[in-house]
Length: 322
Image 1 (cartoon, rainbow, N blue to C red):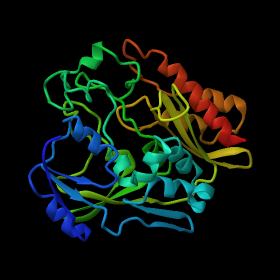
Image 2: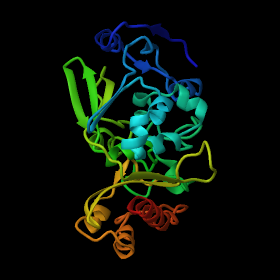
Image 3: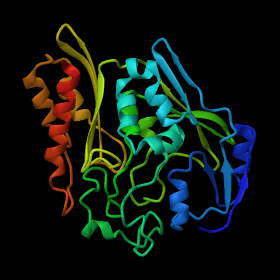
Image 4: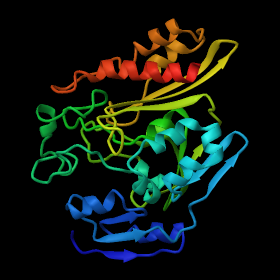
């Protein structure tokens, strides 16, 4: 790990100013950044410590939820209002990492975690995310856990998180603070596809920081299902987040997203369209789930993922529709 200076701003405005320093990074829980720094993948020379900022509130009101960026993952997962009215979010958080990491990890930091592609995290290999233009060995290499949706000839790394997949079906907004003031970005637009610039992963502008996540409505009939190689401390091979509005036995609206399969948290509009306006019965759920992942492009070692995705989506839909 290279040497760095550590700054302790007293408020968000001071933090943004401090982050204007060349090669600066924000740090909060540090569960991802510190490991990357130890491995010399991230090499900041200026760290802006956000711990002292008063940005850890969980504000739940009638039909709305606002989670400040420094709220701990474990605190949000256990909050009674989240468990009751946004179960998909609580379940996704509890499926993430380990209890120790959830106790340290923040909501804002979780959105910004870097890919777990082994080639990205091993500086002995080339990687277009670390060194643009150097190549992507994963395309013809070890790619069992990598993306089947949203990849390019520059990168097929899978977005690793659980929480952002749940936020997709909650139509969350990410609140950002920077030199130009405060703005909000829909969660579906926050993470970027790799395209020709896989090293640019989000819509954050230089110096901007996440201050909060806003969720506009409750989703009591929602669930998150994660399929992985082991029952704890493992990233998803495939996951599914679903939120249904069922009235009189008819699905009035449906929001479905997947993790473990895309280069960003992946919404499944083809499944949503097949559900909306249809009776909430076994035939509808099966027909809709069978459309999950249309247009997928498996790599050499993950051809099992499309089928696993369809089965995972179906299981999640069955859970919510009961």
